[in-house]
Image (tube, rainbow, N blue to C red; front, side):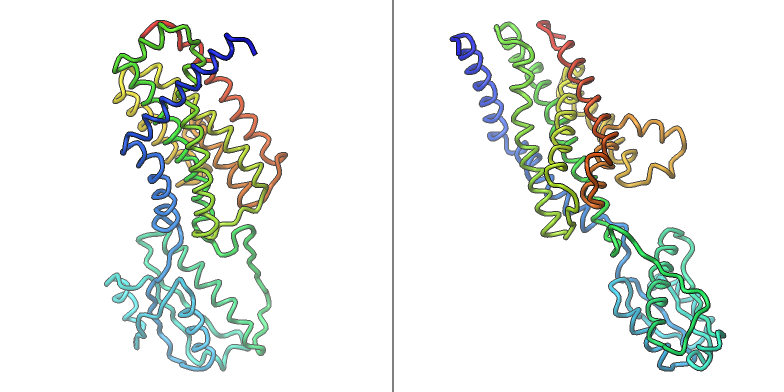
Length: 372
């Protein structure tokens, strides 16, 4: 190795060391980089969930026989419901829902067990329709419970047997859906926002001017500023996966190597995007606003993390296609939950790789020897 290459390598390592030291010395930066991802996965995994649990149920049971009691016990044993009260009159159902203490009323027909085999029995479910999504979810839950409890009564032979089978997430755990999205948010936060602020800080304090007049190439400066965040992102990737598997009980059905490769491509993408933002932004505040408003908000709303893209208006669906996190979250979910191989996510890989090349080329071209 020539003396020039050794000198360049030492300069590069010194820049990387300088960035690491700055990160480790700044308490708030360390909190954002290391603790915030853990808080996000816990919050999204436990606090923000599409599951509805511990819902109070009122029961009107004029029959009070073995069949109705078995169904009531099955509902009560579920993690989604508890029996809040028994009502003596059907007219009390609406009043119970108005008080807001319960979410569902189960009404059994008279002589339930006796009429079971004749097909004259019925169960009415009364839910609060002011929140359609919650009402629909509760009805689906209790319907599945009632259907499963029918098998206990051998005398009953329904003409049509409807069997529901949920693939990949049979227990309908919300964490299965949110964990890949949290990974996308973590990378956007650490790679894009923190990288853009880091380089903008150098411009704001004047130290970037010293770097620009040095013989170091622009690409070397860019890499030295981004490598520490790449390393920290891999650390957070490992932390989030460990929490997901051992705390949230979310399995990794697919290849861990494939998931890691996908994450590394997305990290490179976020880093290059952060560098581009830092070049455009004249100060740290502007860089933070661009990263938060233009990148973080669309990532939360239009990436499929919180809301299904298919249910959005056509214009928003088109905008979602240019959100990098959308492609990563779709691919990560497929690998983690469905266990697919690289052929199934080849489109996502190509799109993310194309975005990486685009942002890197634009960033390097704009990052020249002159201060903006």
